[in-house]
Amino acid sequence: MSMTPRLIVCTEVFPPQIFGSSVLLWNLLRATAAEVEYLVLTSKPGVSAPGIVTVGKDLPGFLYRRDFKVGLSDIIRIFSVKFLSRKFLRIAKEYRPDAVVSVFPSDRFARMGHWLSSALGVPHAVYFHNLWDEVIRHAAVDPGYASDRYRFRLAREWEGVIVKACTSRYAVTEPMARFLSGKHGVPFLHVPHAFPPAPQEITVKDDRGKRDALDLLLPGSVYGMHVSSLRSLIELIGRRDNIRLTITTGQKREYLSSIGVYGSPNVIIEHFPGEDSFARRMQVADGCAVCLAGEGHSPEDVSVALPTRAVEALRFGKPLFVVAPEDSFLFRFVREEGIGIAVSPGATGEIHAAMDTFLDPVRREGFARNALRLFDRIFSSRHVGPLWVGLIRNLARRAV
Image 1 (cartoon, rainbow, N blue to C red):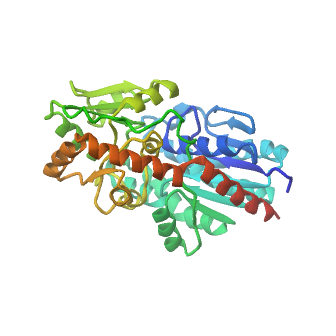
Image 2 (image 1 turned 90 degrees about the vertical axis):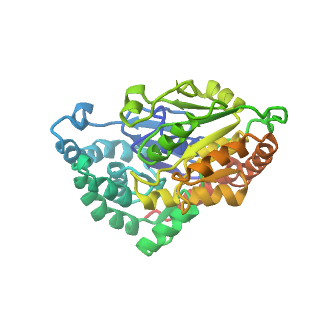
Image 3 (image 1 turned 120 degrees about the vertical axis):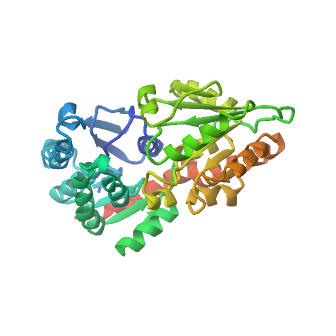
């Protein structure tokens, strides 16, 4: 192993694609690029930076469209792995890595990482940002996604093979690490979300004179994990004149409409404005709304997940207004840490009462102070970065 470990990272998504997983990974790599060299193999041309080289390759996009012979698109996706692996192998050999890390939830790129590490004779680790088998299994039950049955069979066959063949295994929350460790009978280590330290100008917002209105921000992409709870929240906000919800996303309005998410006089949908504008938008918000669905998504994944948007809100000292199942990690985490209010999706009366509580600026100030302290203690890259570098150095030392 060289003085600076050389790591290949296999991931389906990477900036400029805006997903929780890509944001999480970019933050972690950017914070540690001075101590680890990275080659990121991904599906589309991505962002590079000092110490981070990105190579994006894939089959033509029209082959993956769901209207391209329904069912065939996912079969093509499955069998594209060997094709992509061979295309990336030459690049990987020239790079001469010390280890490979694959990021879930990417079925293709996780298998590719498994195959590349074997071909190169270097250790392989997996990093779970979401569950794999459980999420695909839930989608495969839905007759509207019959083609996902191919991916489910793939997940059922390959997850255990990949996990047990790995040298090391990581998960983004402690409950996820425990769940996966119990499922596969091998140890998983907790590697939290990492964000740059909070900007120095971030302070707890003094709203003690503001009691008559509430401005909530919901940043990021909206997909199956969020939809049913978000729709419930939007419906209730529509009955309140003193609460506004702004959804800041890179997704198109047509897609949001197709899943039942619409704008209204007090539900504003904004196109993602860019990092600088987004930071300013987050600073002026009274809090961050985070929704996890009790239906329409894998209950196992919901129970162990911590959305990236929630951690980003903590970085800005923003209290969380959470609508999520009571048995979810997010629900318990918010209540136990005193960083906001958590209510279950079907509890209409409780959600209205929570909105009234959130209108109290003194309560929000307390939540905000706890949020900043918690972020600095757990999620700041000042702490997560050295943890990651230590794990990668240990992984690289085990090269065969």
